[in-house]
Image (cartoon, rainbow, N blue to C red):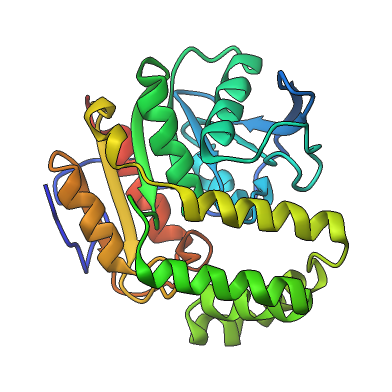
Length: 292
């Protein structure tokens, strides 16, 4: 069911807990070992039904900090640094969307979670789709945020250009990525987000290699063949002003998954879970609270 919702991110009449964005206790850390030798740093907080948050190209658990603060008031929330990112080691396996989906399974196993609700943002949405098709018994519900189904000319051109910039000037790569990830007015008022991002630019060759591998993986993703295996409830959310994964790609994904619901925020940019955290939390609360 395609449902463009421009006013209220929760459907009318669908009760859900109101979640605050105030910071809560630090997540309890745990380590995850993979078959190829990677060590993933994960955290869990809150209590209740389990929600696993899978971040995008950046791959950090930190992306979800404001979301974890709100969601953990009603749910157990797990997030993690993906392989080669942040506090997690790289391992020896080739970086593919399939391998990153296997890493989510490793996180579930390490946390002793039989099944969970999975939220994937951007590249994390590709990982989540692959996980849902590969291990549907481990995925209770699926929320696909600012993501896509198959390659497009727009995204191919964008990320091939970003790859060249990464090789030539990693600081400019990070600066431009940040500028197009947020709505301009929000970024102007929250300029420290830009400064923090640029300070963490991938300056070393090892860091750039990891980013390049991840871009290659997202460009190679095509979930078309996996659609028949995705039978659990699916919610798709995006933003009309997203310049990285434009809203037409969420509409196409929803058309390919006719039982899915689609919510499009009128604004927020690609990183709307950060810039529109309250709206995103409201959406997640409604989605997670819906009976299956």
